[in-house]
Image: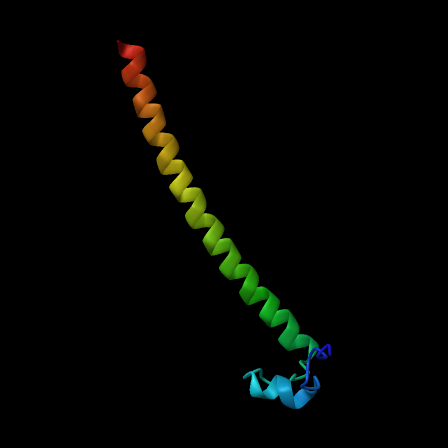
Length: 70
């Protein structure tokens, strides 16, 4: 005999047992503020990546000068 899949019904109580927070409606101001914070964090991360790439480029340019001098 085949056994049916999913013996547990999927309800909101199942979602609560997983540790998810209940949905909270945000005001338009809160949405904009959250988006601004996410954007600031993304910009900071991009700036760090750019600094690392600039340092790497500087090292390659120094290596290029050494090779050209020979």
